[in-house]
Length: 251
Image 1 (cartoon, rainbow, N blue to C red):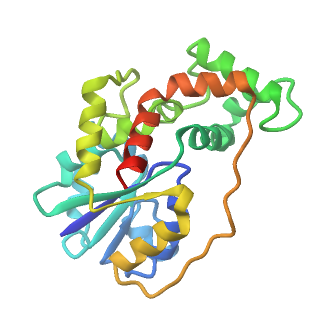
Image 2 (cartoon, rainbow, N blue to C red; image 1 turned 90 degrees about the vertical axis):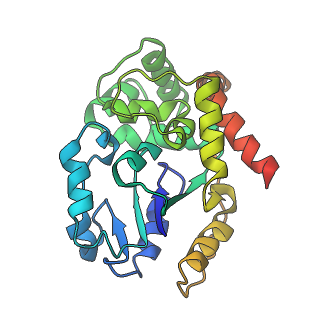
Image 3 (tube, rainbow, N blue to C red; image 1 turned 90 degrees about the horizontal axis):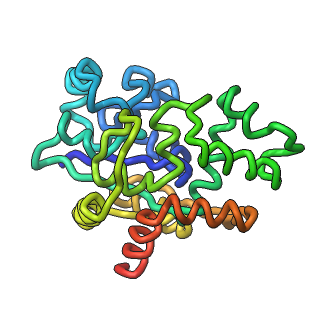
């Protein structure tokens, strides 16, 4: 069985991938291509897998594909259309949606143009003016500074990728049918971890791949945001909140 790690941004996946790097490249394909021994496996913009047939072919032609136990990256469940058969299953890590999006908004300020928009009049990332600028950006349907898959990260991203929507599409509709598909796919996963239980999640996944290591985090901090921004993020992530609560209650 081959396992795909659906790496949802801002859920601790990058650190986990670094630990999983103890697996040799012929057993672990990390589409980010870091560290050095993973460079031959690197495939950029994996979010575009639905439309990029050449990228899909590159995955299957990778000399490590046949022997790989695990592959990971920022892909949607629709990657199964490219690589999937009855022997491919998935794992992922979920995070409280408001905290995840809060962290994600700050992260994508690495984009110079988006940073300029967010920091207009702001003294530091995350202050009240920063969040007011973000609200204006969202409410005006601004598209400057970010690619479509990045803008999708602001709203119901966990449901979108687990349901298998195409992140390269500008407009994606998340409704009850999409939510039910995400629930079904989540239930079918080999393992689902929680960012809020990060030590347990990491150690469970390491055990899944028989990696001898023990991880302990130093405690996770919550980010505080203005109430107005919190209300906006809550309205944008209705289905993600439902999926997160569904899984927590199911555990």
